[in-house]
Image 1 (cartoon, rainbow, N blue to C red):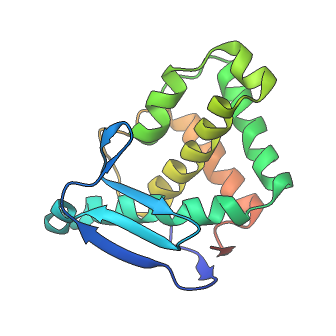
Image 2: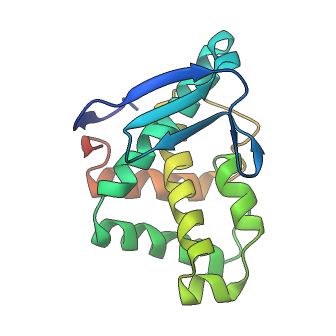
Amino acid sequence: MRLPVLVGAPVQVRLVRAPRDRRGPVDGGAFLRRRRIVLDADLAGRPAELTRILIHELFHFAWLRLGNPLRRSWEELLADEWAAGVPGELGWSAEWRKRALAKRHSRARTRRWREYCCESFCDTAAWLFAGLRAHPDFTLPPPHRACRRQWFIRSGVTRRISI
């Protein structure tokens, strides 16, 4: 699937050595207010992984501008998966957050739940648009991948997004 048309002000992308966040080393990060993405310079030698991480970070800008109805619709999809006990995710950033969730988080829509929803959206976008058939981080079962793909298509996210 091709990357949708991106609409919005430019986003600066910088490669830096060994970026970190408050938890430790990271492959990349999005600074939404500054309209900047920072990626680990070591990714330059791994173009497929660079593409996957860059798309993930770009979709943080899309999540911010998605609007509450679409964000809530995405949350409902994830809540259904969560209630059914569906394992796995489409990226480590969502996976570790999913593992840290308890039932109360989805019911109360806690910050932890909302952060998981955002990371899952961005990881799903990276899975859809990076062109990788397989990756060790793609652990969500295929039927649920298909449901997520359909959500992206129905929502219009596959055609055009604001970043």
